[in-house]
Length: 211
Image 1 (spheres, rainbow, N blue to C red):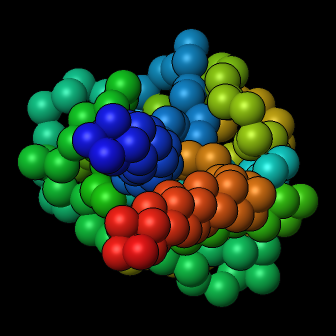
Image 2 (tube, one colour):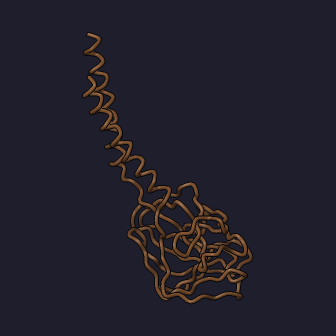
Image 3 (tube, rainbow, N blue to C red):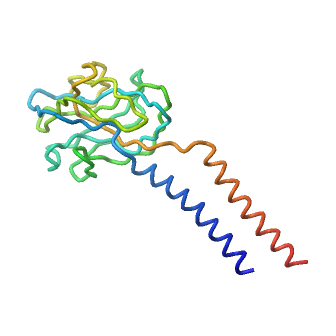
């Protein structure tokens, strides 16, 4: 009996480990775009600066970020927004000096937003060029699952959908986001089936003992 329960426990722990790994991926993620070879500008704002991109695969946005090139915090917090291609706001938050630094951006976690494969989205951060510098990137790197389309910008006193595009490269930053893969439905089905088998085997074992 002890050996059987130990086997079930190992299986259950393995499945829980997969679930925990998926949950961890959802709460961390990686930068959707990394600017490189950039120059720094200031004093001509305020701007909402960011970029537009295509989700090549289903993605989960776990955090929104604002550019902090000197890694010393901000003169003021920055409102960051995520929009669909029609300008509908999907998520927003205020990123402050104490938020998590990843590369040259500070990020604040948000309730996860799922991006559909093939759709176009915009991200932008407000109030750059007035106390906090922004980057004019010569090129960008993107992880799998994201295609960078163009910088996006608008001169505004607060967070506003940035409809103006500057071309493929260089780009203005601005805002950014962390993305993680969305588990396939088959993954959830496999986990549910595994847990169901564990429960069934346990009930059968208990039934034999009662007989």
